Image (cartoon, rainbow, N blue to C red; front, side, top):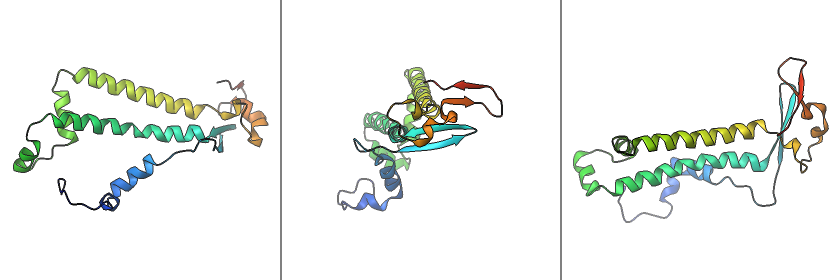
Length: 164
């Protein structure tokens, strides 16, 4: 039950959703530790650093903002547990979303979601297209290859120097 006062400290570990969330939130790269992952894309060599990959995984944590917003909005409802029990309706994300879209703050909410997603997706794109071979700290043996400095698009013979 959601409001049970007597639960074990190990109760969350029985939930599959909690374990998945723990795996997402638990991805960290300790300070001073790094790794390099080299990938061939068409005829080009791209090198990713561990910091970049772990930071991209960390951006998945943005979903936690929704939980805080949902809980803050639902806390404003008086007797929400009583009404939920009598009507057998779950007061969760769907109700919160409807309440936001039916309020004066609907347009700023949609704009904030739009700009937030734009920022995150542009960061992912920038992380995917940037190669760590451009950094002085890269130690991968393939960074000295011609394919790591000069890139070609597809089968074309036109090449260009990769700059970040």
